[in-house]
Length: 325
Image (cartoon, rainbow, N blue to C red; front, side):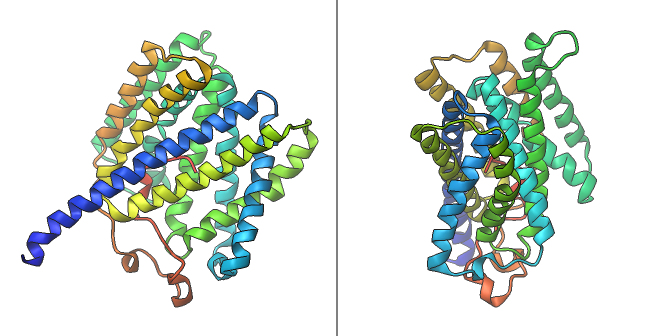
């Protein structure tokens, strides 16, 4: 069989693997939310972030003892710092929102991340603004309004909703930094340096508001860190082997996963208005034309020869398949 005939079959296999990786990532991301919500009942949000940073950095330092420091060498420390601030700010607001709302509600609002990434790319990266993107933004905002309206008092936005939307914005902004960093940085460095930023910034804040934490609280905070790293790894695997346009819809399995864990752990069922609003946002994202598939690593990065072995850079279209990391 000729290479031309094999190519579509290989693409289909890669897309299938990418979808499976993305679905697994969404399940792992919901586990982050479960851990955060369980510990949030006893511990301030800033303390959760600090505990997560402490346990995650400890694990990274152990890994570095075995693999060496070559994989965390960086050319762009300031970009790593900015991304770390945005990443952990996103986590703070999402964890705060989980105090106020169910996991399914928070994830429904986070669906707007895809739209925010597209429009931030238009503003800061000079990408083209099309009519379909404008239509998607309008429909997405309608979806957010449909979900928010029943809880709004006049024009006031409840704290949980506001926190979820700010968290989505911070995550979208850090994804733009990730898009730039993947050109020269290894994935391990992109995981490592934000944890150091969190250690420097959030641990002092956590000390100020610190409350006694049980060993189960440490376990849940550590679990949130573990599942967050697993989620990021699986997202990167997905975007490396599949077209972004194929794996992007797979992110929506986060909603049924969220509904399931809400029912299992917290005895909460979603409201019909939540399903309607989330459906509008999903429809809005589907209007965006996500063209372009995963490219070979050599075309995506300009890493040095020493870094290439450690690099697993995602496709440059990875921002169209968001997942909280």
